[in-house]
Length: 73
Image 1 (spheres, rainbow, N blue to C red):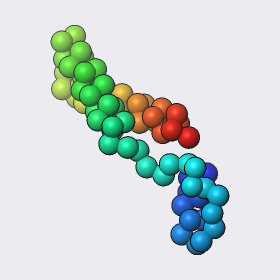
Image 2 (cartoon, helix red, strand yellow):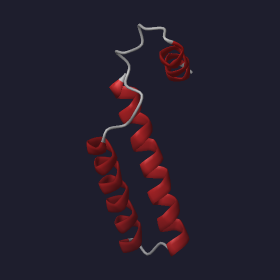
Image 3 (cartoon, rainbow, N blue to C red):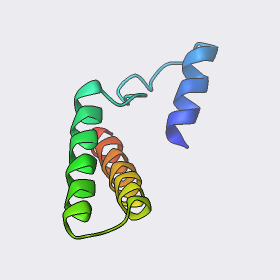
């Protein structure tokens, strides 16, 4: 919610929100992609079906990007 306020404030010309990043960097995105792929491969080696592997990838990627964004604040 804070990010949305800062984005709207920045567009309207208010300042003071510049210290909060409004995007995820390419480095963290590639990190999260790699972690998610690794966990999906582990699920494959464990004998999980394709749907489960996809669910593992999506879940791990979402959790990783959540923490990357939270730690970036």
